[in-house]
View 1 (cartoon, rainbow, N blue to C red):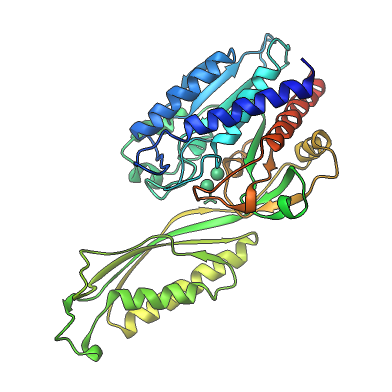
View 2 (cartoon, rainbow, N blue to C red):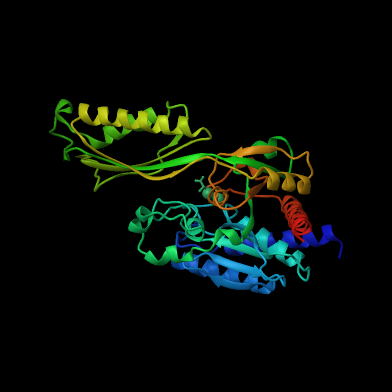
Length: 390
Ligand code: HGY
Ligand code: MN
Ligand code: MN
């Protein structure tokens, strides 16, 4: 079968598998898979069967990352990893994460029988989204030995730090992922190459006022926690960075009760770390002022901070060559496990066009022909790496 025909067949298989995997959820009627949930364990089992079918040795590490490996015959061989995540946000699309893992398996299938001078590993990370504990990258940071005591204090699964493996054995990390933005669609290109991954700060906050009767408490005597939070939410829009309050809940709220306690999250992003940090500090000062004015108690906790991560220039150039140099190069506003690996080994990312740039939404979709292009690009990149390290 010709190479492109083979890639088209593999792309069709990836689309079928995306549908099957997309049905593995912990919520009825929508796709949600969070760290170490029964649904994640079912997803690992399903993807493990596909890795096994591609002739890979399969294991799950102590951080519940799923790892498929095509061993090299070379003594002391290092490892090229192709990875992405298998966990999802709530009410997710089926390609954010899994597409990169399925593409990795397709590369292993395409290169079956090819002697490589390095082990080829495909990894499905267990927690990139950080939905369960608000800490992202538990899987990839566990593998790279970058978990902090604060992370372990927050999780039930204390053994995840044992997933650590020597980074010196990692030759390169490649990640393919839907773009989750409009650039490739606007430039009518199937794939693009990532230059850098924007830094992000995740904050958990709460405001405590005083619950009270909606019908008898005069407005000027209220300590309304939700009204205070609303001031902060609107201020976040004016910080000049990407700022999102994705979760906000009134503790035991009721329509006729003045909100006494509100918990909310803040997600702040910018490719310029100093700008992001300054925006977070300004927002915190504003929140303190709002709390003082309204006689509320503020709790403000930075749960997670990841600096902007540049992709490796040489590996990115190799990926560009494999993709054909006319492909767009762009930063990623979304976080990816490649941001973690960039601290450990040369890392590069391939973006795949997605319809309307829609993501973190069930409407996420990709074209099969673009997936076939991505298979070809990744295969060429791995073969080029093999030539250079042969
Ligand atoms: O939030 C993000 O950027 C990614 O989807 N975890
Ligand atoms: Mn995501
Ligand atoms: Mn993702």
